[in-house]
Length: 341
Ligand code: TLP
Image (cartoon, rainbow, N blue to C red; front, side):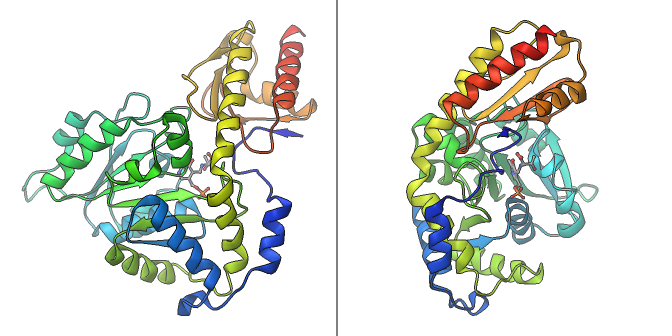
């Protein structure tokens, strides 16, 4: 199978599996797992934050950040197609007791003046604004990189009002590689960051959250409360270390493959690539093919290619480290054949 449904589908490499087998472990709830401690120190260092915490998933990381930053009855500002809003089962509302205020963005980026206008004033009728969330890269906007300058402006205006900024950086390393910017530079304009080890970086499990020491000690408590305090979890942290030390540069290949696929799709009648492909996500509009997304996806599957539906008439293809240039060419030949029939 050529699996382009997501970059979550990657399998751990031999080296990762060996590291898992050999990992030194201890009870992480006591803070005694040396492999987890090493991963957390490494993540904090790379992001330029005081501390970091290993969490089970991107969703859990985002939720913990919301729980630390917000009080029930507050409001959280985010872009209208943010993952936290669309794909986390309303967890922030369910657990943190907040409501979400969405703003339409351009390529995933909120206009700083819109954010400023959305911040609530001192009014007995209104909730307080408790948090601003940014997503970079932006999944629904096709892996778009939210520009550093945009994050800087939003951070400065939020600081004036004393409101924290959380970054859902599930694919932050893709943003960094595509814009040739250190992740630290993006993290500078945030109070907390979540990034995934188990997407393009290829680890089998886990995400990191990072922030100040105080933020992380509160996050540790929330993680425990949510049942996410794990014990000899160094076996899962070990591949995370390899992901950070060795796999960041591999993202460049995923981006090249994504561009090759997008260019190929653009030359096929019946397909329209909807996004400017900056990283590893391609959104293809199949309206002109006169096929339903279900039919198209089924036909791809019959030809051993997997892709996902991502809205009416939109199919998402995500390159990842299990995909080669030859796979991309194979996909293009197959898609052309499907459309010829
Ligand atoms: N995204 C998944 C699906 O949930 C859509 C994917 O295949 O792209 N933030 C962003 C921006 C994400 O794209 C995702 C996962 C998450 C958070 C959640 O991460 P996990 O799946 O580890 O909970």
